[in-house]
Image (cartoon, rainbow, N blue to C red; front, side, top):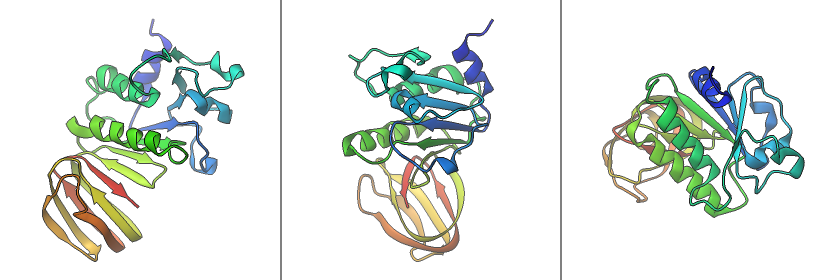
Length: 209
């Protein structure tokens, strides 16, 4: 018989939802998506049809701490979200490499900038050996694996890569581009879109809206 963790992992389809401890617009989440609640995310007291909780209990209230499915040691050298990415990497994606298309994270932006930055880096690192996978932080920060993407939006956006990456940007943008996006630089800062545009990348990117 499968344990709860294995059953949950095997239930994930194209989209996974992850709930963190910080405030966010709760009208934008779905109760029907497979959902991982990270530690203090339990304090939101939300209900999901298919849920797994992970954390060390440092940010969950006492009444919620006992509900954590996967208890982690507080004296550890990785984050609770980092543990989730490792769990997906080791036990799920190796079996279903092309199934997952999007991970939506809610409640991970704001408050401590070091936590916010490290969470984005964790997502970027996870995407290095993936293709056509998006990790979205409340639709404000998108971490993209290598692949082809199409966006329909108005306004300013910036692209960052931590590694030199071949990129193509075409469509309704102020600065179309085809070439090598320089690593850890301002090379992709402040482009503008007036509608739909296409983006192709040979490696992970971070898109700030």
